[in-house]
Image 1 (spheres, rainbow, N blue to C red):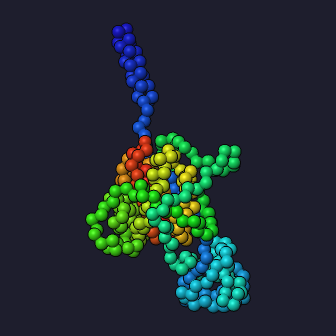
Image 2: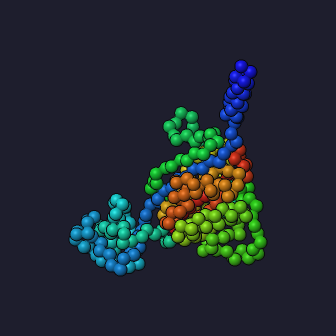
Image 3: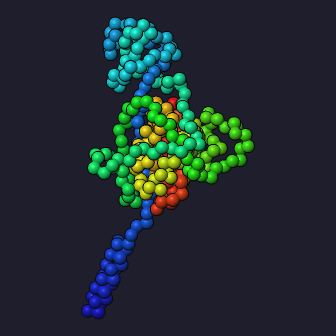
Length: 315
């Protein structure tokens, strides 16, 4: 009888312990989110030795003109996933297969913002209007937000980089011209930001991809976004100050063929990168073979410890 009572007491004690452990709050974990879009294509460069510009979206259509390799053609629109509608020098309209050309930026250049001026914030919708709402507080658990790529037009008025978002940089390089946009490092970013860029490029190398070029202005914009999320207590691709990431890029004078953004909240660079690489959507942005440039912005703050923003573009 005593043995039975002892077993009952032990069972009750164990149940209390397990219940207590199960109701303890878990520590705050990191969060991640990603988004991407393809910009408007204004021109294409022929990559085939000879490309037939046809009268219709069909290889058997009448050939209007044969374009040589490296020839540039103005694009009117992308008809579908396989064809571009182009305007020929004689003002005729023709079609070229996407597999025989590659999109290019106008003038093959990126317009720079006007650094040093105060940026103009995006207009905040007034109460009662129908808009996409930006969540002010997110549940501090792993969560992903995936958006389909969208096509957008033009470059909006440029905003300048605020001075108070630039963080602490490694200024060991004396010559301001020692680094250029063709390198994977940049002296105007912090050590932690450079560490994240190195991790990104190491992951790309392990998957047989080219390293991304570190872009100073992209990092400045990414840093602004991270600080904005901390200052305004939100975790979202849609900023109440700057709008969505693609409008934000264009407002700062960035042109691109395609763009993507990863955002994360975590307590270290290594853990943030690992969390992003373990999520299919974020991994896809990091390992996108089409993107050419990257900028990262890290700001200390928030319940996660640090806010991370990664911006990827294809020039």
